[in-house]
Amino acid sequence: MTKLTPQPGIMDIALYQGGASHVEGVSNIVKLSSNENPFGPPVSAQEAFKREAGQLHRYPPTDHRALREAIGEVHGLNPAQIICGVGSDEIITFLCQAYAGPGTEVLHTEHGFAMYRISALAAGATPVEVKEHERTTDVDAILAGVTDKTRLVFIANPNNPTGTMISNAQIKRLADGIPPSCLLVLDGAYAEYVEGYDGGAALVHKRQNVVMTRTFSKMYGLGGLRVGWGYAPQAVIDVLNRVRGPFNLSTPALAAAEAAVRDLDYAERCRAENTKWRAWLAEGLAELGVPSDTSTANFILARFGSEAEAHACDDHLKSEGILVRRVGGYNLPNCLRITVGDEASCRRVVHAVRQFKESQS
Ligand SMILES: *Cc1c(COP(=O)(O)O)cnc(C)c1O
Image (cartoon, rainbow, N blue to C red; front, side, top):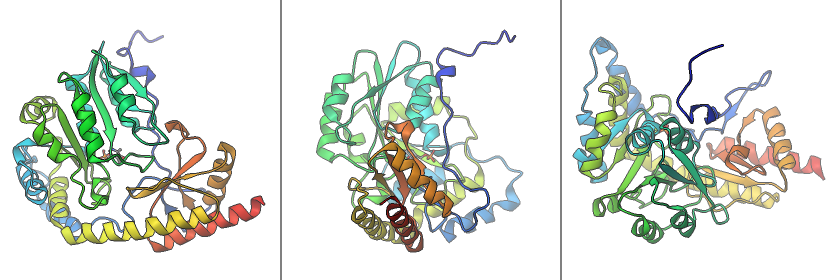
């Protein structure tokens, strides 16, 4: 018997389930289970990545200056208030490590992103789940859930896996109601998909206790490289940089992300395609009796009559080579999360769901 005992909370962590990527015996797979960009990484980023190949013996820069300046330029932000991480997941980890711990609480919503709970537990803190209102962040429920032990409040806006978002006015109301001893984290992993939305950056400027996280994994098509960033008041950035490893991001990752963030045409094209095919997909499924909330992200949350029906449809999709995401782990057992793919993928999804529905009746 082992005498080794992990810290309290660690064994309560359920291992993160990634999106499936293959099915035994089925070819021509379309992966719509991880909200990846169907158009892949921009060519500009691929070229930047390759250019670094001859310099792999060199340590990367520790301050990420070039990437922070590029992000600052493109988004109109102060580079000194930006921190880059191994995906925005690492920024979430830094926040929990630095601000939460035993005896403190970390709040997230009922259908919130799994990493909030995982990172809270890893830091020894107590994750606290609050209700949403019809699969949408409920500001009053969050404010009612805040106690003097709460150190962090995480919301994703738009949220994953619901696809819904709340207005700037609602976010401001949330920020107004949170005590100064508690940080409000606005996870903007899907902010790029919302035309004209700043992910909450303007609010970061106005408050001492609001943080925004962003990622290169979704719109920028770089999930495999693991690059994300956070925007926060200077005092918070100074704290987070103390727990960040000096060489957390590799040189090729930094170079590719910098090229991607400057590739405004690529982002524009991807956003437009997503908006178009998201609407088409949602409508097509609704006509088949599979409704979804209006999504503001690059996926839709398809609702079925029961858990059994959702699973049966998932099984059928899988047999057709279409991989989507079950979200029972997010308290949404009768739903499937479907990434908006390219036109051909969206057509395949609607076709397969129609086959499924016809086989049911
Ligand atoms: C995908 C996603 C992220 C991004 O994670 P990375 O570590 O940057 O790949 C963050 N938050 C939410 C809500 C997400 O869905």
